[in-house]
Amino acid sequence: MENPKATISEGVKQKDQDTLWNLPNDILDQILSFLPLKEAVATSVLSRKWRYVWTSCLALDFDFEKNMKPLTHRSHYQDQDFEDKQCQCQYVNWVDGVVERHIGPNVEKFRVCFPLNLSFGLFIDKWVKFAIKKRVEVLVLDFSAHSHRSIYLGNGLCDVLTQAFGYSEYPALKHLYLKSVGVTTRDIEFVLSSFPCLEQLEVSNCPNLMSLIVSSLFGLNLKHLAVEAWQDGLVNIRISEANLVSFSYSGYPIELELSNVPLLVEVSISERDGAVTDDHRALIFTQQLSGCLSQLRTLRIDLNGMVDREVYSVPALPNIRHLELEVLVDDSLVLEQINCFIEACSYMQKLVIRMQFKYSEEFMYPEVNLKEPAAANTCSHHHLEVVEIVGFHGRKGAVKIVTFLMKAVVSLKEVVINSAQLFRGEVVDDSDEDVEEEEARRQALHELKRIVPAAISFRCL
Image (tube, rainbow, N blue to C red; front, side, top):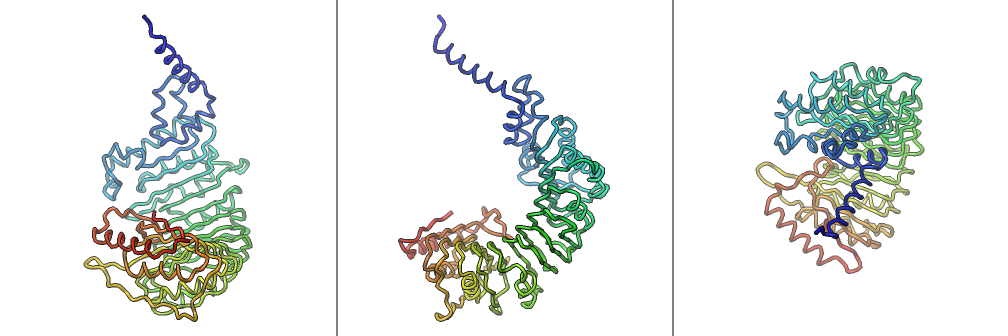
C-alpha cells in the first residue's frame, strides 16, 4: 500500500525543485554570483536548464586559492608553484575556457589572481579585452607573488583597452585594481581620461610606474585612490583639482603633493624606510597634507620607528572623528606622541592603535620603559568614546599604552582588544605564535580586565 505521507513529501520536494528550475535567468545569475566560480560551473550537472546558466555569470573570480588549490594539493601557492609550467598552463586554460564559453551580455566583476609570467601576456590581453567588451564594472588584475615579479601586458595596457572598445561606446568600469602589473604613467593617464565612470583606482607594487598624476585633466571623477609601492620605481604622486574623497599611500617615502582637493576627508599615509630622517617625517603635516588638514575626518598615520628620538608637534585637526595610529610599542617616546595626537584631535570619537613590536631572529628585544607625558601636558579627552587596539601582545609596553588611554580619556565607553598580528598594517596569520608569547598575552588581558572600570565595555576579539 502506498504511503500517503511519502507521496506528499515527494510532491513538496518536486514543487520546490520546479520553482527553483523555473526561476528567471537574471535571478539564477544572481544566485550563481554568490558561489565560487568552480561551484557555479558545477551547477551545470543539476538539470538541462542549468547546463549553461553559468555561462552568463556576472561575477568571474578566477582565484587560485578558492578554485584550484584542491587540484594542485597545495595549501598556498609559492614561488615554485608558478615556476611549474604545468600549474601555470592549468590556470590559464581554466580562465581561457570560461572566457570562451561565456555568452552573457555583461560581466559585473572580472578578477584574475595568480602569479603568471610574461609568456602568458597575450592571454592576459585577451582577458582584459573580454572584460571591457562585457562592460565590466570591477576589474582586478593581481599577478603578485613572493618574488614580486610584474606582468607587462603584451601590447601595453592603454593599447589593449583602446582595442577593446571604440570611443563611441560608453565604458562602464568603476573600480580598477592593479597589483604587480607593469603599467606606466601613460597607461594610468589613459585609464583616468578614458573611463568616465571610474570611481576607485588601486595600484599596488607596479615598479614601472614612476609618477602618478590625478588632476582635472586625468581622473576628474575619481573618488578613491589607493597606492602601494614597496618596490623601487615610484618617485612622486601629484593630486590637484580633483574630486577625491579618500586617498591612501603605503610604501617607501616619495614626493607627495595634494592641492585643491575640497572633497578629501579620508587619508592614510604609511611611509617606512630605515634611512628616513625626522625632517622627512615632519613633511607629512608641513607639506604633504598641509592643504587639507582642516577638512579631514578620518586619518591613518604610520608612526612605526618615527618617535624614538624626538616627539614632533601635531597641528590642530579639528574635524577628525576617526584616527588610526600604527606605532612601534618599543619606542620610548610613543606615549608622548600618542598624547600629542589626542590633544590635536579634540573632537575625535574613535581611536585605533595598531601595535608593532621589535623582534630579532635570535631573541626578543628587551622591554623598553615608555616615558609617560608630564601630568601638566596630559590631555583629558572629552569626546573620544571608543579605543581599539589591534595587534595586542603581552608586552608591558602594550599594557601601559592601554592603561594610559583609559586614564586620559574621560569619556571612554568601550575598549576593543584585537590580538591579530600585523605586517605593514595588514593582519597576517598568527598560527605560529610562540607558546610563551600567547601565555603572556593571556595574562596581560586578564590584568587589563581587572583594572577596567565597570562603566567601560571591554571586548576581546
